[in-house]
Length: 343
Image 1 (cartoon, rainbow, N blue to C red):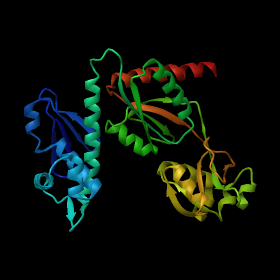
Image 2 (cartoon, rainbow, N blue to C red; image 1 turned 120 degrees about the horizontal axis):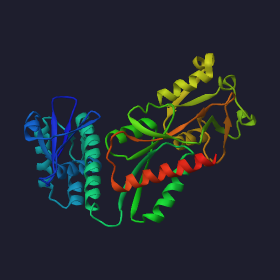
Image 3 (cartoon, helix red, strand yellow; image 1 turned 90 degrees about the vertical axis):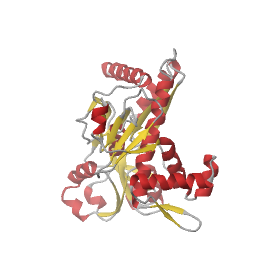
């Protein structure tokens, strides 16, 4: 069983058909194992099957019950009845209904996020147990990474690992450090590569060798593109696309000094590829890392004085990893130990 607790008094129990499995309570960033039925009785739960959550997610995606029922290979009345029962069990309206379409309410959007995490975790758990007795190591390794050049080192370890364990697949999720930590805490990622500054007190970590260099990404036909370096004063009259993460923003604020309050910040971003599109269309210049990918009609100019950022590879403390993830982590440790001894 998987139990999900919410911030309110509502608790949702997801029931799977394996009676021998210990239930797991997931909620508000922590996980507890229910060790006895007596412990379980202390929880007020509403029973919802994972199957029903899959129905709910399909309807949320299609915004049409008839179309969702066809894709799920069930009748439309059956699907409508399941959704109504789900709303009754949770004690809230999940959908706004019109003549032709169906839309999520605020509570529905919250459940969509939680349901997606739960279904993903359930699918992952099933895969791990289905491959547990296999002689050859197989399964998936889930990695979260920011847009950093340290991914080059990660790719080398993955290439070497796949030669040794060809049945293992990798799921690479790209996001900023805060999103990756959230996935690590929910058990949706095994390993993360995080750009500093970042709080890693809850994680084991390896500090990576590569440094990320900060600069400004501009159109190559703008006046600023003629410079080889930029100072805080150079950016005072430039529309700026600022990174969204607060810790990083505070770090850059220190570099700007007294100039920061005079900046013209037109927007924020969390991934550079989309921000680069805004730069190309003349919306602003993006403060970002120097990456190896080349953007057409854009130029990266380093900051002066230079600003460098480190990266760390992390995994949760006291976490029991799947066999593939454990083997992969051991390979990572060996790889970085070897390149550290060479430098």
